Image 1 (cartoon, rainbow, N blue to C red):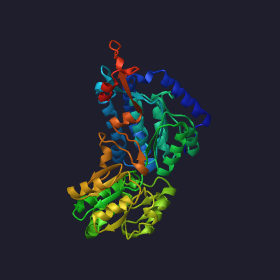
Image 2 (cartoon, rainbow, N blue to C red):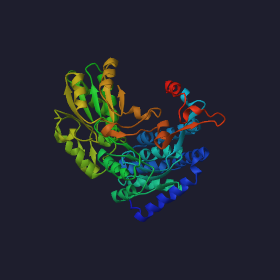
Image 3 (cartoon, rainbow, N blue to C red):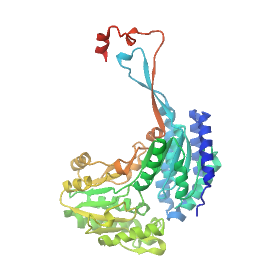
Image 4 (spheres, rainbow, N blue to C red):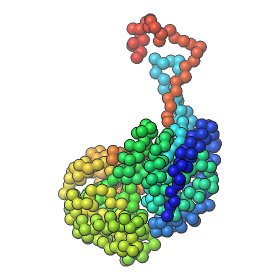
Length: 459
């Protein structure tokens, strides 16, 4: 059980961080690089504790935890250690003739004090990955981990306290009362990962101070499987993506638009893929995660009655276990099709053409991800006709693993982006600067605008 941080502490922490930022210590690039090295060493030294906590809270295996949490953090830190000096260097820009002899550049500067609110599904990397960007940009940061993964939150709070003073990086734990108290403070940027409903709460609070926000939300990420797709590969990759973290992933495939001609083949290939990855009894698999809470279990298990179970369907409330499940004969108006599932249930909608799939997607909110299994020409057309935060062709989720690609939503699935260099810009302001020499001072710019006819021609 996570204890609420006293509300009185929150204002003091934010004020201390503002003072630290105004000391200009974080402007030094070497200061930022050393902080990143310190964080990396701390992650390495506490890696065992983190893995154990992830297993206790979510039943995550070591392998899955390393792949989806730790490796992403190490990769992000290493990328900044290699590139930060180059990325923050002033960038020269062209100066038009009308401004000669001036020179122009863009300076990347930190926004200030950041609030980072993380969810429970990837409680390590979704808290610390934004922190890496904040540190690299030269910000101070207040971190709010999820109370739904208390063991992970406790380990991360201890780790951060050991290596950073609270005036630089602080962890504030607690429930929604603490969230509300944090959102009452004035920050220079708020980075929130969670549901669209809570994203609206964050955005309303940020509007009080005109604070910029990055909202990494979710939504119903569709999959299109065309009649010419490689069905065995599609089933294997989608079964992996949907059982990863038991479907509790913001970019998990949420529903399947599948061509009528290949649906039965897909169902059979899905069953075989689940069996190959998790064995005859998925409940005994060491790599299969459980629902995070009884409430989440009841919600997702309730979706099993919204269609005809054609694969899976097993449940165990005492273990918060739900077997990977395919649902057929699903109505677009059913509960399972109204909000993000966030669990190992994949409803199928039968289509007779990819044009049906396009219309179905466009009739709904823009998703965080879109997955297309089709021939190249069809896939390109589908990308052109739809919109999503990110996308994969003949794959799922893997776009998130490429730190060279921006990650973020669009419309209802979020705003702003991060990962790699984009994380630096997420916590920075790109400042345009024009430098004009004093040795030459052309008279044409001043009143009474002599030779205006010639000046107008330059504009």
